[in-house]
Amino acid sequence: MSFLLSEQHRMIQRLACDVAQKEIAPQAAQWDHTETFPKVVIQKLAALGLMGVCVPEVYGGSGLDHFSYVLALEEIAVACASTAAIMSVNNSLVCEPLKLFGNDVQKKTFLTPLARGEKLGCFCLSEPNAGSDAGNQQTVAVKKGDRFILSGTKNFITNGPQADIAIVFAVTDKAQKKKGVSAFIVDKHQKGVEVGKVEKKMGIKASGCCQLIFNEAEVSVQNLLGEEGQGLKIALRTLDSGRIGIGAQAVGIARAAFEAASAYAKERHQFGKAISEFQAIQWILADMATQIDAARLLVHRAAHLDDEGRSFTKEAAMAKLFASETAMKVTTDAVQVYGGYGYSKEYPVERFFRDAKITEIYEGTSEIQRLVIASQVLR
Ligand code: CAA
Image (tube, rainbow, N blue to C red; front, side):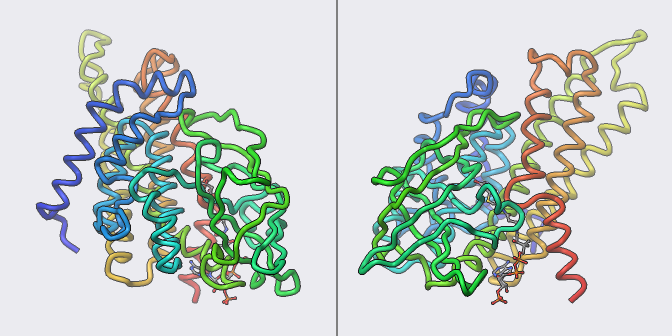
């Protein structure tokens, strides 16, 4: 792993930075305020190949590596954490399992429009009683001839209100417990699939999040992803990749807060000088910069291992854990550097602070990341 970016990596970083700063950053506060899904910008990301970064070109993607993906995602997250969340769900939680476990027909039918950004995906694992305990699925899929009939409720589905295609986990054999869970590709617009409660969230307000209710939704056996009973493994393998993306999103949010706080510290004068001249503020900024770099290195290491085809479960959990806690710490300190202005919606750091919190929760809480890391280091 090199600490220097290749020309190709610099190009994708510049491409993402350019669209982020020109088209996303100027509108992010407004989208947050009005809770508006940034549809036009998602189409723009799609046109640039950023909705299917790691999908082979033959299936409509950009055919790039996971390292390119995290570089791009960090840039988007600096501008707007909501847009980064939408992008990461489509790339990591939907395109990735279709790429890894789908057959050729499924890739042509579902992966291609998702990678091109013509369709949007969501990932339906969480349920009212299956959050951290993902294996405790209650949604059932009963086989009838050449179809499965899906019934159950999925909770906190990012992209749920806007999605066209859902990866849905359901129990096909109750007796097999965790080994009786299977994964399905479901058309969200079909009969028997309903959008339930739409969540009013603390942060990432421009991304949609809702309950999805499956009421005897008929799914062809051809839409079974992987094999029957392989569902939980598909979900956990998918989340390994997803957690690297959330790490990159967290680094982006932290960087946005650091950049705002350091610029403000140079402008804000108290006691006759810029507050950046006080050691109390300098030490806060020094710690922020150090933690952000450390978080980014963990994210890059995990992405690199994924690209090398090596095991990266522990490294992805470490990257997500450290980056999300860094995002929370850095955004809290950025509010502090701004003082009273930091608490006001007129300045951006209160949005960064609200957006950071979700990175410690979704795709596995910090407690679950520690559990995954501990289970690996104690092996
Ligand atoms: N990759 C592939 N397979 C894996 C795996 C991985 N990383 N980790 C475990 N497995 C396999 C195991 O080997 C096991 O298979 P065998 O029995 O054949 O050996 C099977 O999967 C089940 O593993 P465990 O028995 O270890 O599973 P568990 O029930 O004890 O759960 C857990 C482990 C770490 C707690 C896991 O449930 C977990 O990660 N929970 C958190 C779930 C989560 O992140 N939810 C977020 C949902 S997505 C989201 O946030 C929504 C959104 O829209 C953004």
